[in-house]
Length: 209
Image (cartoon, rainbow, N blue to C red; front, top):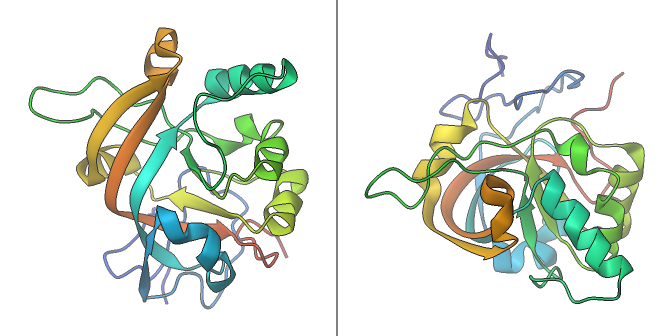
């Protein structure tokens, strides 16, 4: 399998390196040419079947949540309040979509750097979070928690903003509307191409030799 010069995902999934993928280890099997179709409702049950380097097509319900939304959710938990979304079994997309053009459900919707959410992620994983979509590597504590709680970290491909928008069929603000683009939105996605970056078996595409 050959690495693309710009580190982006080829049509056949021969290689994938998400934006911000400095530190990706070279694997002979970097990304499987077989794209696995996964629904968000079954991600928890299928976590054991997913391995770092697999290309997947994700469909179902995904919630956007960036820095500000994470801080509010943690503050709510600290105050003993119920979260505005059911975190158990949820998939969070670290993105802040731009306003939707006329006739479309959403604007550009590319991922932000996942490391910004690392400080909050182990706690959410302990509450049942099962999937995260973003770009870049995760802290050791997050990788360990992904294994402990049988979750999956997925990376969006390079230039994912416009591509993601094509895969999003609906978008609805469900919490923290005052945060604007960083509000929590419920997205319905269809065949969103992603790469398993950290699996529940300890596999991590960002590991260095």
